[in-house]
Image (tube, rainbow over all chains, first blue to last red):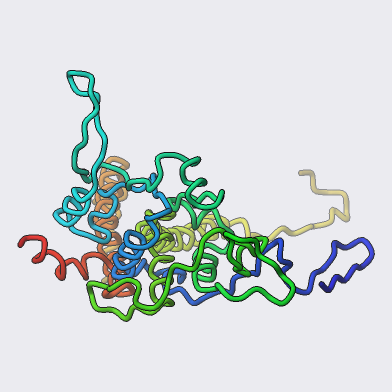
Length: 264
Length: 65
């Protein structure tokens, strides 16, 4: 590792160290542009990838089925999706717990009942909840995409213990999750190409929406407020200068009292 | 000609505080509606085919089956 130390300055490092994780490159996400919304077709595909691949291990406890209405699915579709799952509800009048089909108001089901079960099923590694994962990771969707597509053989001399997998983008390099996104592992209902890179892109976009559900509204309001504020600032500047013009255009003249005659 | 219009405007609306206030509130109402629909139109143009309302039609019929 190359370290350059200059007096009184912190150390400069030439490249990411393994403990930090390889810095994910910046991909040209369309929705990162200031006035671009999410691509809702991509969000829908991303949800499909999450549901079919990721939800086997990763929970998303803070997202409810109803959050998808008007974003990725219609109300009828969401009701049907929720009804596929079984939820334990109760207690009823007899004090018993019962099972019922899911409703749009339910939150996404967790694959494991608790963290201990999740760790036990995954070699001690806890698959994190995905509800705010973009906010919780430096690099956000760049990181998610890089992690999902970045699996490779470890460099010579690096040993990864049994049960872990090498991923340069993961801090430390040894990630508990195996590679899950391969070409055509999900069949898109809209017929979009489903290579691994597209799957990763769509699921990263979906997870970005999960972290920032207000994104589209926020940007639209930002457009509106910038427009109004620039008019407001323009008017304010003009108004101030108009009022101050009397002060700014006055002349102050010093007339020396040479003969000592004038009395003020 | 324009000056006569401005003079008329002043004497009928801007001279009295009460009428001025009504004019400000009314203008704000109209301006907000105009700016809202204007920015929505700009937003929709910039985000053509990206929003839910653009892809909604593909799924509404299926849901009604």
